[in-house]
Image (cartoon, rainbow, N blue to C red; front, side, top):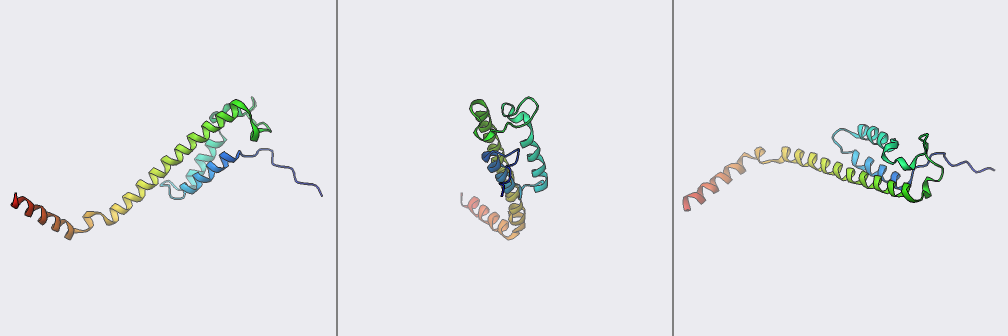
Amino acid sequence: TKCPKPPIHTMHPLVRDLYKRVLYVGRDYPTGLDHVKRVWKKAIQDTSNCPSCYSSNGTVPSGIMDAPGECHEELLRAVYRGRRMVKEMIGVVQLKKYRAMNKRYGSSNRPHQNQTLQAAMEEVEKKS
């Protein structure tokens, strides 16, 4: 029996890990997972993000996994930028969740608490 050939274009493990992180965070992203997938897939496949890792005709060299020197450093910088973007996405998701919670349970939905607070403030003002 013959072993199957490996795929021609294999994704670097760091890039694969980054994409998995994006998918995990993208589930709760306000624009939806489909939009996140589309934008990130396009960004990952863009050769301008890591130009030294591609040959002049835009194809990935066969030894990308053990790419030496400049290509590897550029790949690490691109993954670092991607991870920063994931952190930004996490911040947007947290803000979305905070606003939803604040809208649902904010002080405007509890008028009795506002009245109690006003009464306490008036009592403090009378004492001073």
